[in-house]
Amino acid sequence: MNSKNVAWLKISGVSGVLAPLVAFTFISLAIAYSPQFSWTENALSDLGVAKGVTAVLFNSGLIIGGILAIIFASGLFVFLRNRVFGRIGAFIFTLAALALVAIGIFTENFGRIHYYVSVAFFTFAPISMLIICAAFFVTGKVKMGLFTFLTAIIAALVWVLQFAMRYVPNVAIPETISALLASTWSIVLGFQMLKQGSRSNK
Image (cartoon, rainbow, N blue to C red; front, side, top):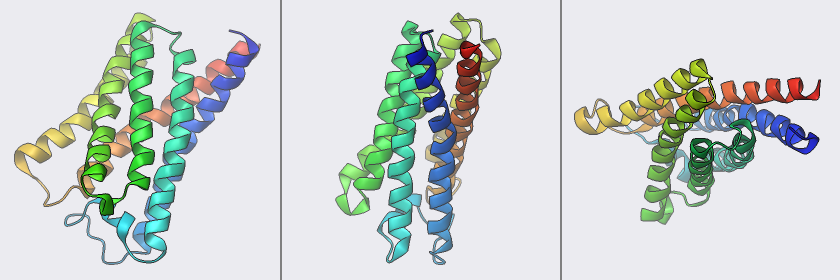
């Protein structure tokens, strides 16, 4: 691996760790400034059109987190050794990251556009992980493959159960669970990319 790829692997690895931390920090602050928010009766995106600092915090968190996720996604091409499944999965994860940015830009006030970009994020994220898990298996990273596969399945199952059983009146809870799973995966891979970048320097 050349020095340019090593440097970018480290940068994208750090971005993979920071993206969910930044996004969820801003979301938590937005919730703290919105006492009327209900985990069962609201969607997270309701925070994006709330009055005052709440909307600014929420939307800024998604946009900044999404930009960091795009940087992280670009490093996946290097980390996955340009395998076919890796390239496809990294591309789809990039689309998910772009959708995350779009959620922060096209708030609920934009109507159907907001709905489409929200669905895109929660659809593309698990699909990308399912494809990337194949790249891990091909390169002999069985543990990472299994971890990625299980994370993707549970993230998708959260939504399947919501549509089938409607276990909560609104979607804040399934949104949070699904996003936390994708975030955990991003952080784990981010550290793995940093580790690989450090080894390549030796």
